[in-house]
Image (cartoon, rainbow, N blue to C red; front, top):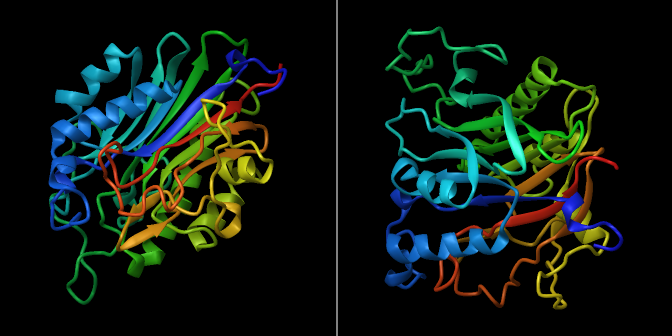
Amino acid sequence: VGALTMAALTRITSYNILAQCYVRSSYFPHSPSACLKWKARSRNLVNELAGLDSDVLALQEVDQYEEFWQPWLAERGYDGVYKCRTQLTKSKRDGCGLFFKRDKFELLARRDIEYNDIAWGRPVGYVHPEGSPEPTEAPVEADGGVNKYIRDCVGVLALLRSKTATDGYVMVASTHLYWDPAHADVKLAQARRLLGEVELFLASNSPIGSVPVVTAGDFNSVPGSEVHSAMLGGFGGRRLRSAYAAAIGAGLVDGADGSDSSVTAGKHGEPEHTNVTPGFTDCIDYVFVDDGVAVRSAMPLPGRDEVAAGLPDATRGSDHLPLTVDLELWSR
């Protein structure tokens, strides 16, 4: 990391940890059945997260939140915010979380994003009236089918203040966009909604002029897709860039053990893969940062040969890989 001490940096991890409610041996026939059991998976996941020791965790597919993750995170020194998926499609009860070390940050504001709001034409920043129940019926299209934007996908935004840096504010997002490749239009609408929500959230809550932005998650979209391009386009005149692509391009991928580790660069300079199964292997997870954020290093990701059989495996608890970057959020 050169002359910059690690203390001046903020380590952020984005990780789709694979909710246990989606684990079936039929979905993951390549994974030994022992690796799919929650006891083994949870042990691997907590080992990975403890080893990374990140200051901020943007997690997706978090289920068993109250029973498992909240107590474990609290014990590790994290506070945070969690948003469960909406339930109009009787979806599974996983969600997105943002967790931060309580000795490093405090929470100033949060905003939950429900992408179902797109279906109702609700404006960015829409607040559900206090006490009014959410509709239990989804809006229907002319052909009688459910509105295509009803997917129960969510995200969460948090404005954090550093406890160690003067005027050290940062806005972090964790989100999980819709998965189906046949509905690229739905994903794009969700990405645009996310950018609009970030812009309004900053305008409504920023204590200083230009708060650094970190927008992380599982975007279910490959490099060069419309979603990827929209995210890089940013919001309100502020462009974003992929922290991993920046680190790869600048030769800043750095193993914690000092080994000669790397990330295999794929399309658009992004990692070759962040999600690895025999049926689908590509880059769909990202940490986007604005131009004011300096990317100082990124943790290596295993090469294709190392995870050739697919994930989860004996040591990795998810079908995704954690993306971990060390960022200089505030110039000194």
